[in-house]
Every structure is written in C-alpha cells, then in structure tokens.
Image 1: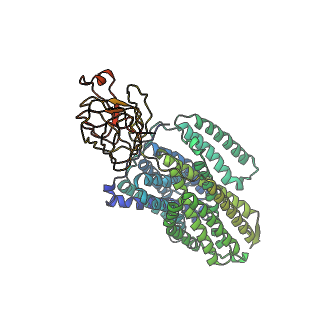
Image 2 (image 1 turned 120 degrees about the vertical axis):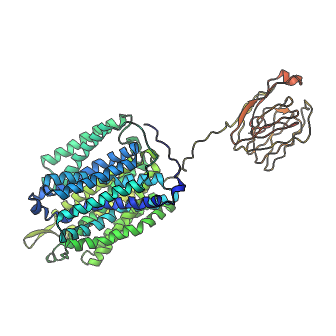
Image 3 (image 1 turned 180 degrees about the vertical axis):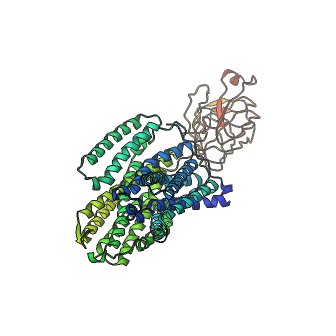
Amino acid sequence: MASPVPIPAPNRDDDTGPRARSTMVVLAYCGILMAVMQTVVVPLLPDLPRLTGASPAAVSWMVTASLLSGAVLTPVLGRAGDMYGKRRVLLLSFTLMAAGSVICALTSQIGVLIAARALQGAASSVVPLSISILRDELPAERRGSAIALMSSTVGIGAALGLPAAAMVVQYADWHTMFWVTAALGATGVALIRWAVPESPVREPGRFDVPGALGLAAGLVCLLLAVSQGGQWGWAGPRIVGLFLASAVILALWWWRQLRAERPLVDLRLVSRPRVGLSHVAALLTGFAFYANSLVTAQLVQAPRASGYGLGLSIVETGLCLLPGGVTMLLFSPLSARISAARGPRVTLALGAAVIAAGYAVRIADSRDLWMIMVGAAVVATGTTLAYSALPALILRAVPAGQTASANGVNVLMRTIGQAVSSAAVAAVLVHHTSLVGGAPVPTLHGYLLAFAMAGAIALAACAVALTIPEDTDPEPEPETARAPASAAVPVPGAAPAPARASASASVPVSASAPMPASAPASSPVPVSVPSSATAPVPGAASVSESASVPVSVPSSATAPVPGAASVPVSVPSSATTPAPASASASTSTSTSTSTSSTTTSMPEREADPVSQAEPSPRCEATGPVRSGDSVTGEGALGGA
C-alpha cells in the first residue's frame, strides 16, 4: 500500500484563535446531532402507519434503512477520508444527512421516507472521521480528553434526542421534527467549513470500488437477516438465504482484499491482535450497551396492569434516559485520565466490568423508577469508559494514514453488535410474554433474562479487553541522518578495528605542544576528557603536517596508545572507540565537529617520508584538531 503522508506538528500559533478553540466543540456538536438523527423516528413509529397509510412492517424500514446505510457507508467514507481528506468527506456526510431531513420534511410517502432515511445514515461516519481529525490536529496533551468526549457523543445524543423528538411530535406536526434536524444539519455544515481544518494526513492511491461494493453487498445481506429474522422467521428460506449469501460474498471479499494492492480495508492490519481484538471488543460492547436502551424504554412504558410496568409516556421515558446521557458527558474526562495513566486497554476492561455491574443492579430491582434510573446510569458510565477507550486503542495500533478507515471498521463492529443485540433481545422478549388486557406483553422474567444476557456479553468484552496486548513499544522517533558507528582507518601494519560511538559532540581538540614527525612506539597519549575517556590504540602511524582531518569523538572511549606522541584532547562527553593505529600529528591540523560524523581524506605531503610511503588515514571527526594533536575518533581513538 502507498505510504501515508507523515503528520506535521500541529500549528501551535493557531491554537489560541477562535476557530482552533471551536474545533472540538463543533465536532462534538456534529456527533450529538448524528445520534439525535438516529433516534428521532422512534417516537413516531407507533403513529407512522396511520400518518403514512403504510403497514407497520413497512414503517419499520425507516429504522432499518438508516442502520444498513450507516453500517455500509461508515467504513467506506472512512477510507475515502484517509485518501481524499477527512474534512471534505465529513462535509459530504453531513450534507447528505441534512438533505435526507429536508426530503423527510417534504413528503409522507413511505418509500421516499425510507430512501431519505438511508441518506441520513451517511452521518454515521461523523464520529470516526472526527476522531481521526482530532488525532491529526490536536497536541498530545489535549487529544485524549477530546477523543473521549467525541466517543461519548453517541450516548449523549441518543439521550437528548428521544425526549426532544417526543415533545416535538406531541405538540407539533411530525414534519416539523425533520425541518428542525435539517436546520441543525445545515448549521453543522457551516460550522465545519468555518472551524474544522483539513487534516494534513493523506494516503494516496486509487479507491477500491470493487471492495466497497462487495462489502456493501455482504453487510446488507447480513444485517437484513439479523434485523428481519424476528418478522420473517429465523428458519424461513429468505433469512437462511440471506445468511448464506452474506457468508459467500464476505468470504470472496476477504479473499480479494488480501490480494488487492490498495484494499478498502487492510485485513493484514485487522489480523494483528491489538487491532482485531479491539474490533471484537467493540462488537461485544455494542451488544451490551444497546440492550440497556431497548429494554429500559419498553420496561417503563409497560402498563401498570402487568405488575411491574410504570405506564410512562414516550416523553417521560425519554426523560428517564436523560441522566444516562448526562453521566456520559461528565465521565468522559475521567476515562481519558484512566487511559493516560493505565492505558486504554485497562479503561476498556473497566468499562465492560462497570456495564456488567449496571445490569446486576437492573436484575436486583427493576420495579422502582429510581433504581431503574440508577442501573441505567451505571451502564451508561461503563459505556463511556469503553467507547472512549476503543478509538484510543485503534489510534495507537494503526498507521496515521489509516486512522479514519480503521475507526470506521470499529464503529461498524459496534453497529453489528447493536443489530444483533436488538434481534436477540426481541427474541427473548417474544418467547416470554403474557396477556395483559388481551394484548401480549413481555414478562418481567423476560426482561431479567435480557439483562442477564447483556451482562454476560459485557463480561465477555472485559475478558477480550484483557487479552489485548499491551502497548509497550515507545513512540517511533522521526528518522534522522545518523553517522556510521565505525570507520576504518587504513594504517600501515595494522588491520582496521571496529569502533562504536554512542554520541558525538562539537569538540575543540587542542594540542599542548608540537610533536616530532614520528614518535617512539611506546609514547603515551594523554587525553584530557571532561567526562571520562580512556582509549587503547594498538599501533602508531605518522600523520603529515597541516592535515585537515575531521574527527568524530564518541561519548565514551577507552584506548591505550602503544605508539603515539603525547596529545591532550578535549572531549565534552565520554567515548569509547578502538583505533587500529595511532598517528603522530604535526602542526595546524584542524577539524570541525557536528552531530553526525563526516569523513574526509587527509592530503598527502612530501615533508615526511613515512606519510609519503603510507596512505593517508581516513577519520571521522567532530572537533578541530591543531598542531601536535594525536587525532582520535571513530576508528582512531577508542576501544570496544
């Protein structure tokens, strides 16, 4: 696959401007509005057959169409954002959502309404795209809390949307609700254009159209079977055929993605434990979270004649769910702090465990309203912790150029988990009903079984989270030019010896006295090093006068010099390098030091017969060397 464009450092000069400060607020607004859009039709469902003249089965497609399009478009638009710009795709998805709202506000035809709801499903990509933008734009100290807040907008919007939509439907024409969401959507488009910068990270290449079509076909078959199994019959030919078709299509899609040069979804990346297990945890967490919303709403609206129901209206039901949304807003900073201190893996496991504890509260008491609200709030708290940890895990495990598509797949897994949760809860409640006033109503035992099932799935999510490998690798450092660790010095009578350097510094090397052209074989070389250095040097060679020799002085050196003249050398940090031979240096030798070693050849001179007979040594240097210096460096001064 093509390499992504590296992330430049965020422009700190713009961090204090009104637009930069508003980016997080605008993206959170978009996430909340997306969740509101998904829930606004729920209060309408009982009345839509009368208002549209359609059957209840046809009306249910207003929810199913949004679910299917959101599941299909989230990974597709995420990949498009990585390739063509996240802000651009975010604007597209929000524009489609606003257009769908306008269409819904203008018609009462069920077919057109279903198509418009499918357009609104494009907004499901808002959260993964926004998280990827925050990852690219914000500095590290602000990123964790921003991503946690962005993740919690799903629950906040759902909690706000239900009572708000119920009040609009109760006191105004139902088309008004869609005009309101259209106006809010247009406002979101304007705010995105004003406050959200285009992400600098792109992954160039050609978009995988066959991969997108294959994924869409497989997901539609799978989710259609899951969502309609209760109505069409799980053993019916249509459901069985859909499941078989989804298995075949997705298997062929998987095979092709592994062989594609630039796949829609990098399955080799998905197969890594840190990524794949995060997706599994997302599926299980989505299942556990969604059961809370489904069961709570039905439980409190059940008639009082059932013996456990509270008979609340849809507006009162929405108000009962509102504390859960407030809880998610308040606890999102806490989840960021836990992830920063212990890692997102621990936060995810803790969140799943808290969800399970919330369902334990629901099983203990589901008759009193205050206990129902407490249990729902505990589940919402756990969901906040888990949902904020999932994108953090993904961002740490995938390349910068694939953050939007990887988070899109993670949101897709949560969507599949929610669809499966809806089908499973419905199946449990259908099999545990009793007649109340001549109508079948789920029993309290059925609700408790649904709570127990969701709690068990939450514990499974906790176990999966604990198996995710820890993020122990340090952050990758930017690549910089580095000098070779050793340099060979051709010296007569001695073989080159390896050298090692841990650092080089700008070092002036000053000679204290001039030296003769050739030194006795046993002359010691005194080395003056501020931070410890000693060096054995196996042999000696004479170095001609006024040779310009770059010398690289490493950080720690040990070198006895069997044959060299006495030269004081100033080295700011300690170094250890072996030198194959020592050299007698004459006057006016100079070098300059830099952080990366440079290598130059010493000019030959006719003043010294030894230097004429032997090749000039090549040394790596980082300090000026003057007259009388014994030149030492990587290969000339050092030990093992």
